[in-house]
Image 1 (tube, rainbow, N blue to C red):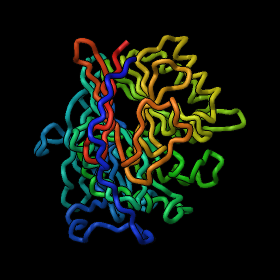
Image 2: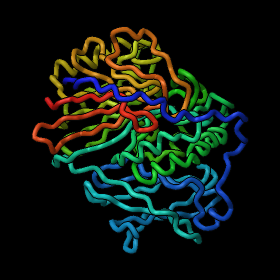
Image 3: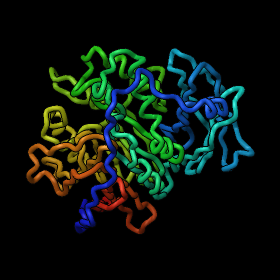
Amino acid sequence: MKTSRREFLRLGLGAAAVALASRLPARAAEPAPGALAETGLSHGCTVGDVTADSAVVWLRAPEQAEAAVHYGLDASLTDFRTAAAAPLCGENDFTANLRLTGLRPGTVYYYRAAVAGKRPGPVGRFVTAPAAEEAVDVRFAFSGDSRESYQPFVIMDAIREMRPDFFLHLGDTIYADREWIATRLSQFWNKYATNRADLPTQRLFSQASVYVMWDDHEVADNCDHSNPLAPIGRRAFFDYWPLSRSPLEPDRLYRSYRWGKAVELFILDTRQYRDRAEPTILGKAQREWFLESLAASTAWFKIVASSVPFSSPQRDKWGGFRAERERVLAHIAQKQIRGVIFLAADVHYAAVCRVPGAGPLREFVAGPIGGPMGLALGRGKRFEFFYRKSSSYGLVKVRAEAAAPYVEIDLMDARNNLLYRSRIDAG
């Protein structure tokens, strides 16, 4: 791995969102009655967990209904297929996930939701992952930490302007423990409905698919599995995100996705299985899956997405589980695994970090989408680059079609000013 020359362009302060002064209502505001009468939808649609041949579509109505999804290759959807209709009922806050199958790899699809008896919703788009044997460029964005009182999340419009294939949301998708505290399932739902009503977020999600992971604020600050609200927070997370669930492991969130020859994305759950008695941040089953899958991957670049920074010395991050971090690094070295790149959010600043004891390995940190700026504890030599003047995101551009494949990672502010650029070559 090598990092290109530093590119400190103008460090614009970005468009900082203004915190709301009033307490949030007991129920998130619904769209105007006219809009509901036309489509029967309340928060648009979101596509997630996309593979080369499948995708999951999330939608919500304000009341009990039945909905289907039309999808096809034509932007006007004059010719389309229909995913089986699903009931929207109060048990899931009138949300549903509909799975699309039999899709073509590396293809742009258009889709819309259709609530029974209503006018079909607006047309969105997404792209499927290229087949594993295809050397195709990949472009995606990542960030995290969206606190509702900082709406509108204007950075989501900046991300949309860059036309990513997908967006990776690395946790704290709500703040259940801030402004007002959620303790019941309906209150957790309300937190999600409030954030999903954000218009810049809806605009981004109508044009790019999403991969998502939770962190602590979906439940409570610095929480783990022992928190009594964790099962409720996890239930609400599944209700409000387009996630592909396994009947054998319905609560599993860690997973991986292949995007052509160039990329395999590993999304780690650093909350659900952490245990200080062992100690472990991943839990045995996830750790074994991760180490085995990382070594087996034939992708040129292995993107490891962690909601909390891998390089951080803090107790709530990987620094609180140093033996397990060292075990991961030793495995990478022993198996001679090339092209590993770490991504994270959580700490509310942008940074390029040196991974302790890992030589040239780097971690790229971005955020928040909306929230107060964070502090770098033990800043020192760990940082190659550090920025905390405004919200930020990372734009990852995988150049698979180049003569010598490489990844370019840009850290960007909310006005799409380039803060810092890094390059990582294959091999």
